[in-house]
Picture 1 (tube, rainbow, N blue to C red):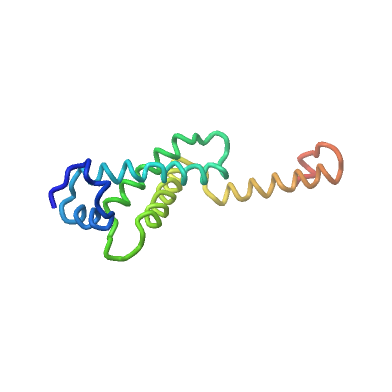
Picture 2 (cartoon, one colour):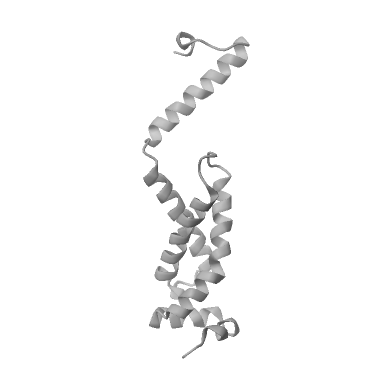
Length: 137
């Protein structure tokens, strides 16, 4: 099936996947990248909601793009799972994997810091003033 990139829109996506798995045609790969790029932005937007302000949306999109590329390479149409479903998982995973690699603070330390912050807020609300270190301890 020798296809030109302009013809991809007229072909069933399942047929394109079968062709891509067989040939690794770069035109087909590029077609899938363009088609599913909005999915990366969608997933990055969902992830960004729970992130601190110092995490840039564009960085999340960049990390997610690597996940999309990986999903395209590893997708198996024979498993009868929609690519979109598979790709969302891979994109989200790639974003979180990259965030973990750039975060030098272990998760346990973050959890303890959140506990301390929660205690400070509770004490300040209870006492109606800024609390001292001894009171927090």
